[in-house]
Amino acid sequence: MAIEKTTDAVVLVGGQGTRLRPLTLSAPKPMLPTAGLPFLQHLLARIGAAGITHVVLGTSFKAEVFEEYFGDGSKLGLEIDYVTETEPLGTGGGIRNVLPKLRGEHAMVFNGDVLGGTDLGAILDTHRTRDADVTLHLVRVGDPRAFGCVPTDADGRVTAFLEKTQDPPTDQINAGCYVFKREIIEQIPEGRPVSVEREVFPSLLADGAKVYGHVDSSYWRDMGTPEDFVRGSADLVRGIAPSPALDGPRGESLVHPGAGVAPGALLIGGTVVGRGAEVGAGARLDGAVLFDGAVVEAGATVERSIIGFGARIGPRALVRDAVIGDGADVGARCELLRGARVWPGVTLPDGGVRFSTDV
Image 1 (cartoon, rainbow, N blue to C red):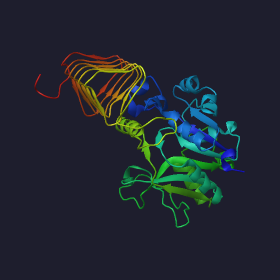
Image 2: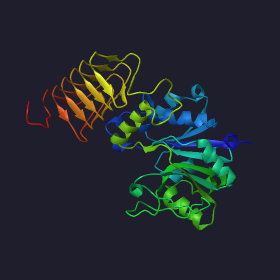
Image 3: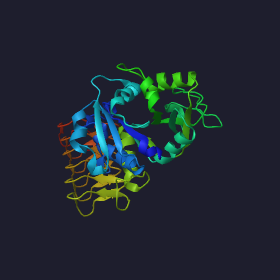
């Protein structure tokens, strides 16, 4: 029997998304539009493509938004169940919390923040052929210092879990995707916060459990910061990051139906223009993410920035590496650079914020 048929998918989507504020004040991070679809939809499409049909979403922050949008999952060919955490339980506690909804002998657990391109079937194959208690997806990265490192032996068995370190012994990092045997989840303490990285995995190693790594160099990005969110969205648009949820050709921009782009506007770098959004003549959008209903007026420049629902960027304004909240109004000739964040509904007058001395 194929392991896919005995495997549930568990997606942990309970985070507050604080690093992406102010966008996450109105919507949970996994529901933010990414290449025109809720971020979570790309992951759900990959789960379905791997032959897994039953998905349990572990929610807490704005939990109702997920069920309102995805319902029972039938439109995506899935069966979706929902479990809401009333208090934060950590990664391990969140997995234990969904146990009553699990049906199969195995559970493939995903961090809802990650945009990935790995072959999920290959991870399941590793889990099956090793008869592993837990299999971790490990991805090789150029600079592993910002991540937890996971060394493996010649057989692929995990030998240690190392927190972020300045001198990592391996370039293999924990990619936030795990396959558990059901009985391992049953052993996680119930009703209290538990970390898989700090508590569950180290204790499994100490007990001699079979913990294996599935190592690859597939596309992988944690979408937690504005910079990563913009780059991940652009990579989807340009076809660098795969997603079965997107059809049609890849290219320098993705303009949704009902959006208006004036002649002479330049859209490059994987820019996304949401439904009903407007881009004025001579505007330059490079790696920009415009949510539905956003407006960029004539001659404005938006680079590597996220423009929230219904926000407006005035004529000849410059927005670079910034986040503009829903319904904000940035006046003409304003300059917002290097991590600037404008909260929802805020109005900046024409020329009201400048970095350069000329007016």
